[in-house]
Length: 193
Image (tube, rainbow, N blue to C red; front, side, top):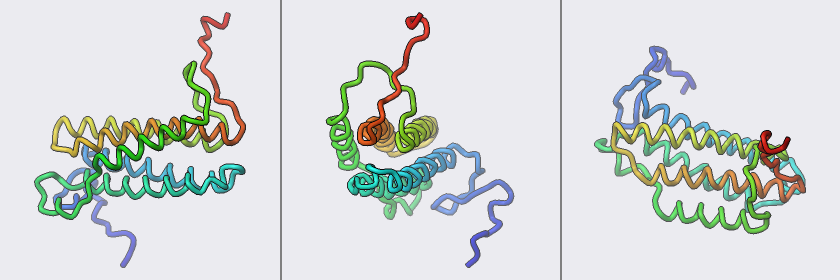
């Protein structure tokens, strides 16, 4: 089987139910941006494996792997219209996955100092990549909200992406903490004078 099919050469793609939509369809933008978040998580995991002391955080890699699988499920959910007969075969994210993200947020916040200011994206390489992943996740969330204004969407997807972006922020602070790098605090230039 060849990697290329040429079916998308006219700017269209197929959803899981076989229906064709334009590649700039809201549904495609939503699951495509979820896929982008997933790719960032892969880069983050690879970078963390090469950065002491984050390379020893095996739990971190397992959590990322879990999230990546769940993002594939979310992509499949978004690529399957609610009226499609294939819906029964598509795993849907639910309350359990959202609660797990919340527990990971709490755990990541525990060892770091409380927030007293806004944090500018930066710090160590992994923290910086987590901030990029967070902003892409927020974009995915916005695309899903837009799609949900026009089509039926699993409402837990928006909640999951909202929690995931919070987790990526919490992990960015945790990664800086583990690496011994301070967060970059935002300074209001008008007050700094």
